[in-house]
Image (spheres, helix red, strand yellow):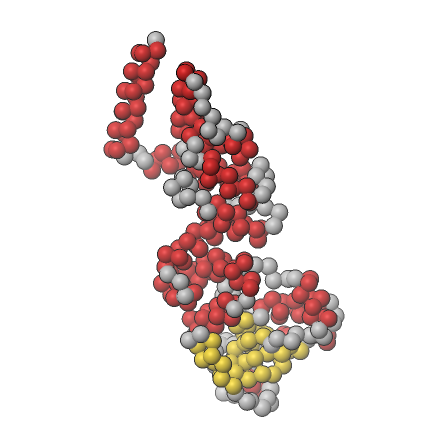
Length: 312
């Protein structure tokens, strides 16, 4: 069986390229855009079509940086992309617009098809060198890697601990709940801001309320979520925020509000009632039969009976 290079009558001058722990032997050539196939397990989840990138390709008269590709394991005489999916996608758009001068693409070809782990290691090593890695992609890639290779291997490839990996995945899971943002890519930013609040304060009812109010566009700036750091420790402000009519601004107005006499007690009781109402039914089901919680409820009932008797 002949190699892809031999099929194209290419003179192969292999060069060694070290990317993290993986050593590649590659050669450079040009390939027809139709002979290049995207990786179906591409870790990057963001949008690929970019008009600005298309303008750059045209201004430069084509691609300067070659795509890193490997011989396709199942399609003879085809290459599979390791890195460069966005460059390929936007070059393809130009060709589909009738601009045939962008059909031939510079590629750097590995002398073998990589293993799944080597392919991921190479891709991540390349992207960790780029500025956009920390800005947009870390959580998305972590989530994809866990799905592809499991937690331990994903953490190893990313060069982080499993605990750090779990935090990234948690942020991505949370970002998936923000479904009504004008820019879906901003969901990670919203999730990061919310996760910046103390974990002790982020009960399921709080997260549910935040997501609901964001999706209803009642909270429109992700940085405003920082106000929760002051609101949630305050019983009155927290209860107001959790209520259907509550929002960040009105809850903030209730911070540190101290009333005298019966008004103070009434406010505290209102806060307790609203907090209990805000607990979702699913959370109550999970607490069913909790002996410690039932004991606390008994204590609260006894205290309320005594209070009622004293005020009657």
